[in-house]
Amino acid sequence: MSARANILRSSAAHAILIAYTILALYPVFLIVINSMKSRRAIFNEPLALPTRETFDLVGFHTVLEQGNFLLYFQNSLIVTLASLFLVLLFGAMAAFALAEYRFRGNLLMGLYLALGIMIPIRLGTVAILEIMVAANLVNTLTSLVLVYTAQGLPLAVFILAEFMRQVSDDLKNAARIDGLSEYRIFFTIALPLVRPALATVAVFTMIPIWNDLWFPLILAPSDATKTLTLGSQIFLGQYVTNWNAVLAALTLAIFPVVVLYLIFSRQLIRGITRGAVK
Amino acid sequence: MLRPRTTRRPIRWHIVVFLAPAVLIYTAIMIIPLFGTLNLSLFTRGEGNTREFVGLANFVTLFTDPRWSSAFWNATWNNLWFFIVHMLVQNPIGIALAAILSSPRLRFAAFYRSAIFIPAILSFVIVGFVWRLILSPLWGVAPNMMDAIGIGDWFSPWLGQESSALTTLALISVWQFVGIPMMLIYAALLSIPDEVLEAAEMDGITGASQFWKIKLPLILPTIGIVSILTFVGNFNAFDLIYVVQGALAGPNYSTDILGSLLFRTFFGFQLQLGDPHMGATVATVMFFIILAGVSLYLFGIQTRMRRYQF
Image (cartoon, rainbow over all chains, first blue to last red; front, top):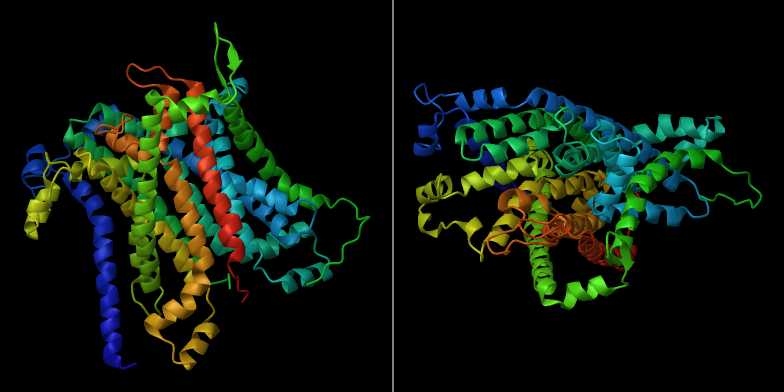
C-alpha cells in the first residue's frame, strides 16, 4: 500500500471517529454549559458558552438546597460496588465450574443460569417485594444488593464461561501436577487470565445497577436509602418547569457517572489491549 | 484433552462450592419470583379477595377481547419496530466503529473509544431529559442547529407526532447504546491473533477485503451475542419510554411497547386500577416472546457457528 493511500485512510478514519464522538458528546456538553447560565441566556443563546454576563449558578443552588444528593450518591456507590463485587466473584466461580469440569448436569446447569439473561428480573417484582417484606429488608440497601446480584449473575456467568474455556488446559494441568488445589488454580491461574473479560463484565454489570430506577422505587424509596437515579428522577419531576434547576440537576447526575466511568474504563482498556485473552 | 471418567468417583466438593453461591442467590431472587408471576397469570381475583383459577382465560382476553387486544397488538408491533431500528442502525454502526478503531497504529483510539461509550453509562433519566430538552420546540436548540446547516425546514417536533415519536425514541436509544456492541466487537477483533492477519497479508488480503473475508467470519459469534442481547434488551425496554413520554406512552399510545403496557396493566394509571393478574399475563407473554427469540439463537444459530481456537 502506498504511503499516500495510508494517510488518506487514516484521515478518513479520524474524520468518522471525530464526527461520531461529537455526536455522542455534544448533547451532554450542551446540558452542562447551559446549566451554568442565567435563564434568559439559556433560551436566547443556548449554543453559546457561558460568558461573564450570562454566568449564573442559581440552578445549582436550588438543587443543593432542595436535594440530599450527597447521601443519594453514597447510597448508589455502596449498592453498586457491593453488587459488582458479588457478581464478579460468584459469577467467575460458577463460570469456572461450568467451563472446567465435566459433571452430570453441566449443560443443564449452564442453560439454567443462562435463562436469567433473557428474563427481566422485573417480571418477578411482586414476588420479590413479598420476599423482602418477609425478610424485613424493605428500605435497606441490602435488598437492592441482593436483587442486583441476582440480576447481574447470569450474564456474568455466560460471558466469563466463554472466556474460561479459552484458558489453556496445559497451564492448569501443570498446576495440578504441581499439587495446587482447584481453588488455588481458580484464584491464581484462571481468574488473572480472564481479567480483561472481568473488566468488560464489570462495566456491563455496573451500568444498569447504577442507573436503575425501578427497584429503588419499589424496594428502598425511603429518604435514607434513595439512590442518585431515583433522587434525581423525583427532583426532575418536581422542578420540570424550572430550567435552571433541571439543567443543574442533570449536570450533577452526569458528573459522578462519568468520573466513575473514567476510573473504570482505564482498567477496561488496559485489560482489553493487553490481550491476555488470546 | 482426555479426562477419563471413573464411575465411582467421590463427590467433587469444589464444584459444589464454586457453583453454590451463584445458584442459590439466582434461584431465590430471580427464578422463584419469576415462576410466582407466571403462576399468577392463571388466576383472577374472585369474590372477596380470593384467587380463582381460570386457566388460560386471561390470555384469551388479552389476545381477543377488544378492550385489551388492540393495546396489546399495538405494543407488540411497536416493540418489533423498536428492535428492527436497533438491528439496522445500532449494530452496523457499532461494528463499523469497532472495525475502524481496531485498525493498527490508529492514534487516539483510547480517547475515541471512551468518548463514544459515554452515553451508554448515563441513566435513562438523564438521556431522556437531555433529548427532551434538545428536541423541544420551546427551547429551540435542534431547529437552530439545523438552520445553521441549512436544513431548518426539516425540523418538526418529532417526539410529539404519532408518526415519528417511536422511531425518534428508538434512535435516542441507539444513540445511547451504540457503545456496547462497539466495545464487545472491538474486544473480539483485538483477540484475533496477529499471525492470522499476517498470513492474510502474505496472501495479499488487506484493508476492506481483509475485514470482510478474515475478521468478520471470526467475530460472527460475538455479533450473534450482540444481536441476542439487543433483542432481549429491546423487549424488556421500558425506562426510556417512561421518562420521555410517561406511562401513557403518548402521543396516543404511539410509543407504547410491551414494557410500558405491562407497567400500566400491573400498577394502573389515572382512572384504571392496577390488575396484577392481567399484568402477570402480559409479563408471561413477554417471557415467551423472549424465550422464542433466545431459543432460536441458541439452537438455530449459535450451534451452527464455527468456533476457532487460537
